[in-house]
Image 1 (cartoon, protein in one colour):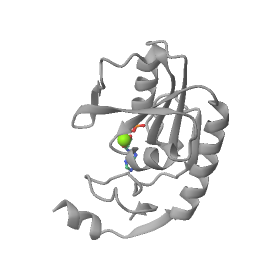
Image 2: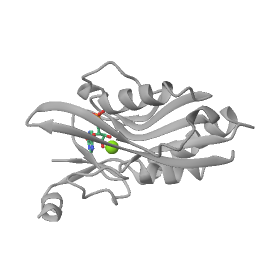
Image 3: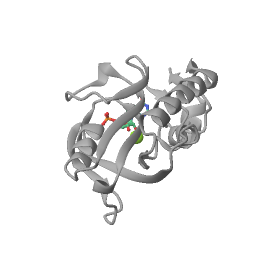
Length: 177
Ligand code: IMP
Ligand code: MG
């Protein structure tokens, strides 16, 4: 069972709930100043960003709309296939200053493709924030505009991030051993 799979593992706290809260509060202040007077569109990447976005959006004082994008990557064995990007096709990206919110940038494939797709739809501006950066995993050249923390070459869970769908509700970021 998946649940056992996670609870069997040892999880070391890498980033505490308090440290996350502090960074997000600082980030929210910066965004509130940067976008003062400009209505914002937050786009959260499902599912991993749901807690990060919920906390960050509440630290931002400019009027904000919130939407989500869901990606799925097809693989056969170790071969990476197409990345499917699902979003509300009625959304007019060109009406907004957009802030994309993601849990982690690892290989870089997901955010690179999403940033390209949104960029091609001519938003007023586009800014990409990842909670975590895992530079050791990078397979394509891509750097978000902002990453709040860096992690090493380890699998992390918590604060929205999962291992086989469990662990998202942990209040901290932990490494699995
Ligand atoms: P990418 O490899 O940069 O395209 O990241 C794809 C997705 O893989 C991220 O949005 C995460 O959902 C997931 N991911 C990558 N590394 C980790 C990790 O260490 N823990 C949990 N999820 C991860
Ligand atoms: Mg994700």
